[in-house]
Length: 253
Ligand SMILES: [Zn+2]
Image 1 (cartoon, rainbow, N blue to C red):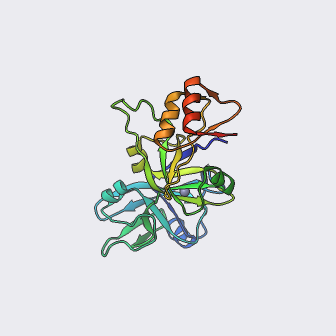
Image 2: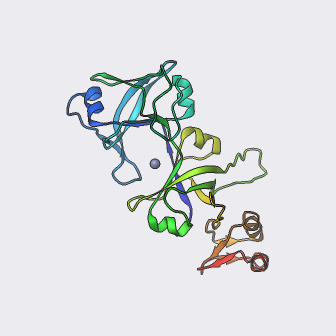
Image 3: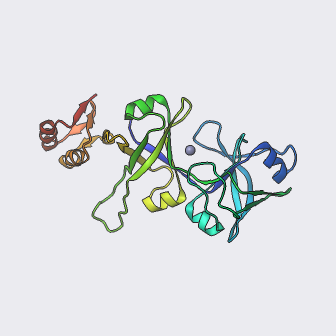
């Protein structure tokens, strides 16, 4: 398989408990599926609510299903500025003293002083894929966009993202989850791909699989201390082959 990981960009959203669902949409109300998400069983619902903060509000914030045991509102840093709150990154903690968010649905409102966070970027992956790219659950890694374009172009704003949490589960399909701030900063959109450049332990991984390996690819691999996997269908230019063999960057199979 390829060691490329597709990107999924998350807009502001929330997960509700049965209790909060009842308050916002009425007793016994159910989420209706608008669109299935890549991860099995997860879906974007048709329902949304108004989110009101001390300084600003959003008219329509989507609810993701299914219902959960714990309430969780996920927003970007830019959203937090707009609302006028300072939520924690990637963990459940109370908002700073005095900060409150109100959610308003068709049947009623709820106020929250906790369970609001800026998501921590993470990669969903199953055990087999994790083993192939050399990562394990709870590792943190660096990732880079697979399509780097012309590095000399003024339009290229390539960035490497660090502290990306690895989450391994049998049912997961490989996907990097980032929010809209991260996606915009890195020039990534849903469906783009990234690859793991380096683990937090300093172990470098392989370059993404490519059909044609040129001398430039080999030089990049050497600079990043990466290896290039050569498969039966891979074409390697003579100059790349000489340099790669000399520097021992090729992995077979
Ligand atoms: Zn996720």
